[in-house]
Length: 414
Image (cartoon, rainbow, N blue to C red; front, side):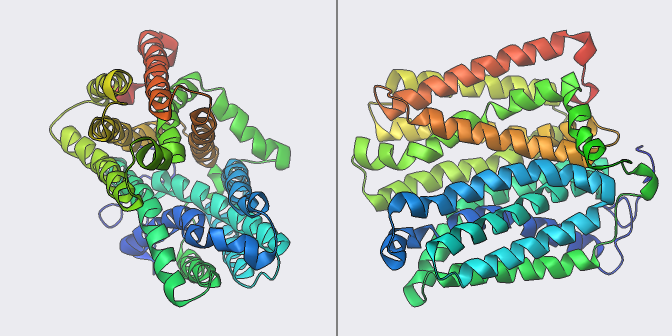
């Protein structure tokens, strides 16, 4: 049992949450984690109209997307350690204030410059809130319930990118592009109210002491945990081919295979559905006694098989391509719940720093995947097949090293 918080209150919680309660805390963490994909994608249906609206160019408008993702990633890296020093609640509340203010500023932006800056403000709040909410999973929930919470967040991570453009498109039928940001501001305001009800989960005696450099030094201490970093990179490598698929999937379905835009949405929805099934697959397998170690062996087998199918036959048929991606997405998403739980369990303290590094590495791997996707491959299908096979093979080598190294043994894998 971890120090300082050894008593279970109310089913899933390790500590009481007063007015917020167990249900309120789950709703809060859920809202915060759905904000990120909604903030990224809800306004995308309006992007083609923004150059004309602001009298600017498409590359400049794209800075509203790029700036958001970059600053959110680095905010994740900073706000987690700050929550280890000052407590979860003040950083959580501050992040939601920044996010809500940024969203409303986006909604009233009168120039492209103001919209870009407002998006950066919004992204900083989103990154901080996501980092802190991940730390709360360890702080607040009993160990055998954490994976279910993480699985829920994983499913939301799939549903969000699919649902948010649809919602944005619906809003655009009746309102201007500003409406999406007013909705995001409303979500931020609701989340902010819930964070005000949240009761601090990190006791004073468990907080990191010292100044700013000492606080950020928590990242270095977590990074020196070799087992943590090797396992994190191993799992993070699965994100590379997935984000490559996100980056060029529309070109593959529409341009390469000649599918209609509507057909593309159906194929994309199919792969997303399998991603949503992944965490459920793990929960069912673990409930029947399967260990993370054995399950991970199966994940490697599925991913290598999917890569082989893509390289051998993926270019011949849209159905073969989609089937291989569904197989990979199922395996990739099934890893995340128990991997995140295991990673959080590696740190007795500095949970905020661990949370920051987890989110940061996953995001960096995503950016890497998007960049590698557009290299001059023979075609994008081959490119994704190569990335899938190479990243899985590299992850497998790290996995074997992790299992054979006594100095990096992770007991939770057994």
